[in-house]
Length: 264
Image (cartoon, rainbow, N blue to C red):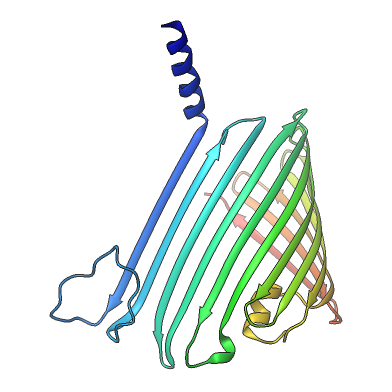
């Protein structure tokens, strides 16, 4: 009897560490007919009465999600969209699978390892140069250092390989460093630097090129940001932001922003 109680307690402790969440949304718009209502489980149709179709599902599985020592998260997302345009149907499919391993050491160091696999498909039968079928694979290890509530530093390396079913291939290797420091109770400053080395053998100014490069250019890419936030009073907060970048052989770009927010 004691052995059975031990097994039940062990199983109960294991189940308490598991977290599951799923969601699904389906919507369809079409011209009215004499036929009955739309079956919500049925997939998209090529019926000429179809105006728009959207399907989205998301599933998450976690172990030790709320632990302060370690956790593992597995996430799967799939979406489909079909819209009737002036040039015919435009169909998009996205599948995203990711795994994240997280652990904390000595309460000041956090280690993350993220792996992702994503499929991105666009089908436009009447506009062939816009079609693509891109498989992306990403590995990103991260290390974070936190000292109380005053200082946070994070560095990571991201390796992203993308392949279009046609001929294009891209490889993006990025090094990222960012941090935040609270000067006093009402003032904080944060900054970040990203250095990316991009290889791409396709046409940059094309639909597949835009998706595969994520706004970057072949060659070296540099991006940096600085953000100063100060609480002026109990109801006002001021923020000054600076952003700079240089992509490939293009010129430097500098952007500055300032804003005042009222907190009611």
